[in-house]
Length: 344
Image 1 (cartoon, rainbow, N blue to C red):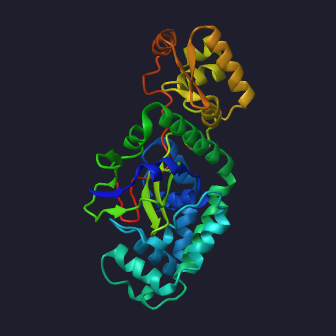
Image 2: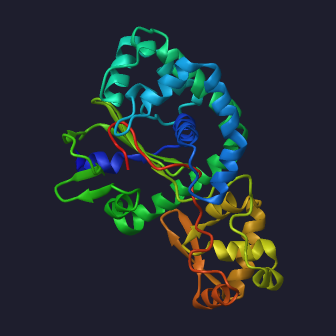
């Protein structure tokens, strides 16, 4: 297994970061795989995959670059610069564009675990081509939907930050994504592969959610390390209301209010519910007050956040209406995998 040595001070200084470039690269991975894992993802791919494939068909060199860079067990490092707090997409993609061409070819060779195709072997424009493709995907695929994606990502950050106060970093890291867990001896397991351990004590450590169901690790030795993981929120097609509540429950409580109750399959904050439903913050707050007064939900403080969850009465009502225990658990719009030496 691959693991990093992390001292207590480094972990205490770590933070969650939302990265437009990481979200764009995760979307590239989904388009490259072309494989949906849930209905919302199928809708997303159906709308965007034809244009993506047409673009690569017109540019066979970039198509080869993508296939080489998204290796089986290692993604070319220059494609996934380590996210930085507050960095815009333009600032991040500039770091891809300015990579030394020889270094980029070396990263691609490692990702392929073999020689580069002849069409890539002597090219000095590979970083520029990669940056152009990422910019195209950001402008055409991600940015038009960025406000909604960002709400989902920020809701995930709020929930995980609150959970740090409840169960500590070990509990949060164990649930971050498959292959990631906290080990004895101040060790953070980042994947299941037999790669050499890394000493990162004293470095900047960030955790970066993406809406696709994917993840990887990246680093800029020795200053900065990142774990990119699939967020827990829903991003399914263009729906704004989360998973639909059963008709019987909607008839009793109203569609919007019943959706909020169904989504409380696990404790969530008002911010999370706003992101998942697409309803206004004030509307979600009013629904929660009604549900709270009716004894269907309860609230408790976790750090700076207030989390709502169903009471026993709320559980009975949801189950009696035909919604199972998994109702409201969103799937990220993405594909499995990893990078920077990590494939989950």
